[in-house]
Amino acid sequence: MKARLNITIEAEVLRSVKYFAEEQNTSVSELVETYFKTIVKPKKKKSFSDLIKELPKPKLAENFDWKDEYYKAKKKKYGL
Image (tube, rainbow, N blue to C red; front, top):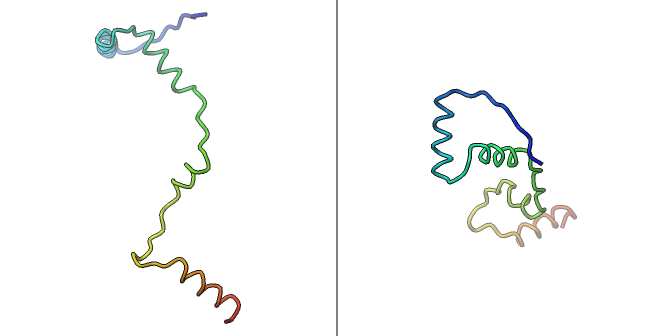
């Protein structure tokens, strides 16, 4: 079911929007409705892998060796 909405905007903006809507083969009402749908749509939850990808990347030397660092830390931890 559709409902009416009255809005007040500057005349120059309305002229530009009407021109834009005509170029897009749509109506001003459709543009407004589409915009409103985008701002009230629930945000998509990010997956765990997306969150991991957003983490800051550590700055490591090009020749950094994870395996070597692991064994060094292990020796240090156990006093070897």
